[in-house]
Length: 129
Image (cartoon, rainbow, N blue to C red; front, side, top):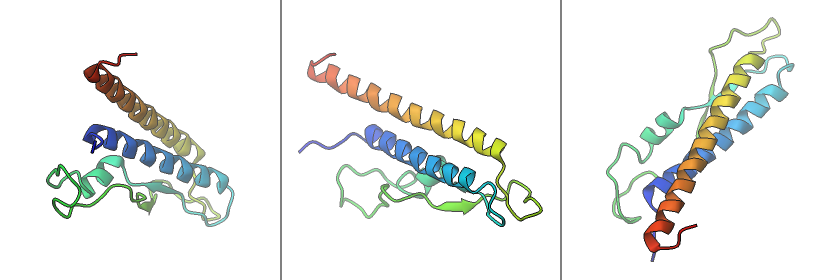
């Protein structure tokens, strides 16, 4: 009967993307001393979003048109921005720290958008805090 507003769905996907990115960062840090390990990262959320439903027509109900659904795990890509060490490992702990902060910021923003949307919906139905 009630469908979730697009902004809340988008915020949920942004939080999920940030969580998946945190997992990948943790794997990179855990393998910082593994010979031959190549650092990985997820595609940016903007690319992930534009590659799925973001560039298509918006629909009001599932089944209106065959658009891509979010809910898919974002693809991981090899990170080639760092020069590998002599043992072939390309993990840079400094770069991973920066990615972790970016991911945390992305997650916090998603939660703030979700909370603001909930507050707005509560105000509309007359159930303020």
